[in-house]
Image 1 (tube, one colour):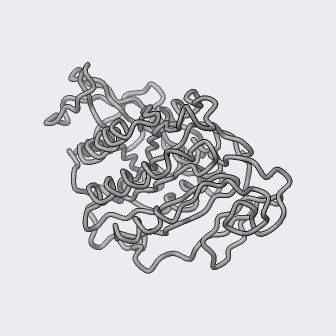
Image 2: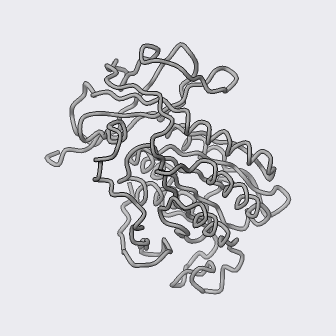
Length: 338
């Protein structure tokens, strides 16, 4: 897997250039410390490195409707095909949520960005509760952090409203698509890089429920990383990924990149929803995501495989009550002696 050298500066731009240096904002004062667990529910702090695997998931019927009210006895869980003993089980709805919103600002989104800004802001107003946090990223030939962690819907709306479609790719002006230094390939949509950075730089050290919502046509152009790198970063961050496939078929759009996006969402426990350029479908998709995030079950178990080798472990949750929507596994924390 590719390794990204990091160059930290006090800037709001996450720029991926020839040397692939990363620029990020300092952590917001509103962001709680990941090490402060004194006021947190014990279920929030389960991590593989303390011997417990914790997975959030939904259960749906054959019509895709959420099934509430299930109990621990309704589930079986296995790791790499071997049955595991469920140690913890809860039906979670109010645990704090950390949310990343990633918006494609490349040319294919020219006619749909205003709709994304309006409906996205309404979604954040609905879904964010007092202890929740969210951040905003836009991506085209650069990856830019528009708003760092905050609970303020006003600040998030402001950050979203400032997003612009990157149509002037040859100006060389920072923030206008040219970047702070010349770029050899000025056209691009750094979709995979944006997902990786959101997971690895923003969510990996957070605890509790985490999700990334990506609004894009699904087409990547110019990323340094591959889709598997993005998937692995999301899995290591224990973050679900939702993709809303959105673009204007009458504009610069040339085809949805649904295959890779479907793999991303299925492997991380989220979903891909096609909305085209239909505002009603976009609103409905956000409503579905809000319901799923507030209607999750949580299972915790101590793996029978205690080896800390850093390898991927496949996890399967089964129930006769319906279909489980969950991530497909996790990466065991690697022992420093390995």
